[in-house]
Length: 257
Image 1 (tube, rainbow, N blue to C red):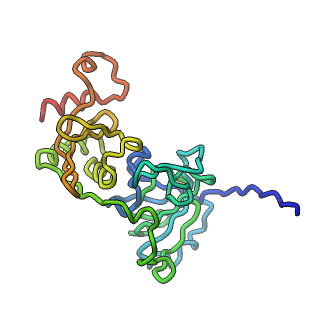
Image 2 (image 1 turned 90 degrees about the vertical axis):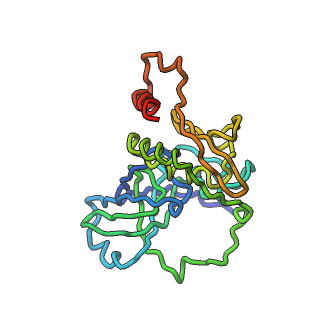
Image 3 (image 1 turned 90 degrees about the horizontal axis):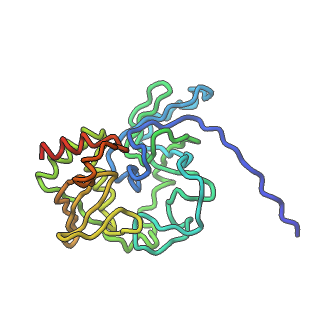
């Protein structure tokens, strides 16, 4: 029996997502893990009648392209769980044969060609392929089995008062919600060094985000963020080179705290 060759399919995006999360590490593992917002801008070729009646739904599905990814693997290490690799179709990994993403997000408002959404895991400039309404009777199965995810331990991430003050200042300087970033990175498998920049230190563990370092300790089911520090050494501060353009922020942080 001759097997027919699979045809190639091409999609034209219907719009583009715009939001504060630019780097893949900044995106939550699922949108519900972070209270954030963003906007879907519909392309000019999409008739606005397509949005008719959508405003009355609380949630919508967004189908989109993982535009940062250029390759895929049949097995991946998910950000949640042990270091064991899983079949890519048993995960939400972006490294897929076809780089199609699917997210359920809260629809906040529709303004002409702009859809304001919340609770998302998309990155800035993500091409949007389709929009569908979320239907409780068809899309919600609260008693469904969760496979390997059922064995995961969820940690509560807490912050020392001094750390909260430091993170509030740092978030303003970097225009990033660092507290939310740490919460979504360390709430599950916080010491998983194969998928996170984490290493053991004398008084616990240290998580690295770009040029910043965050100390934390684990107490039963709680991750406590205990310190914020620079990733630069004193020798590196003496060099004129500033490849990340952030040495002034580090020096000001050291002066203030």
